[in-house]
Image (cartoon, rainbow, N blue to C red; front, side, top):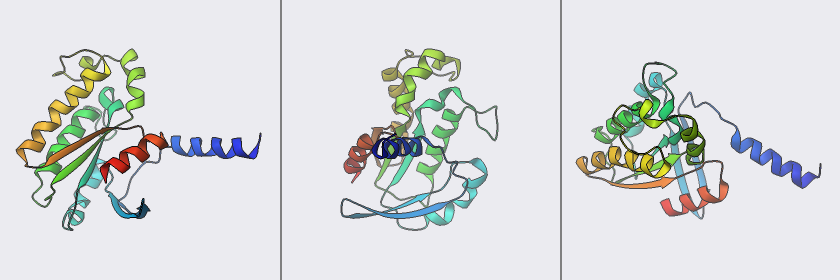
Length: 180
């Protein structure tokens, strides 16, 4: 295998690697001559109580990541709870948190590339009792938007939504450029 192909294969493998976030991580990096300070607060239920000190700092925005592929999955910590339903409830909790004073929330509908495969195997309405639309990408995203848009309006902040595939470097670069 040529060195170029091997480097490309390693990049793809690294992008497809899933690292479980089980602790709060604080990252500062430069992108297009801007400094980004990202705090990943880890989404596991047992870690959520540790988030409050990070909300005390001045936030310019919150990036919230929904896994589009999670509608047919349950929480690892509580198999009786649907992952997407929990994610929507958590979004509302964060939006209503008295320490969070932002003008906008940025929402990533991540794993957008996996929806087609999931939809071919799992009917959305089998997992989400209030889902009454078609079993297709467009209807599913409209459902997600119908859940989070009113939360933004009720809490007085703007919302910027992006369909993302974290392993697609070009798409993510465009999204991050748009987020700026």
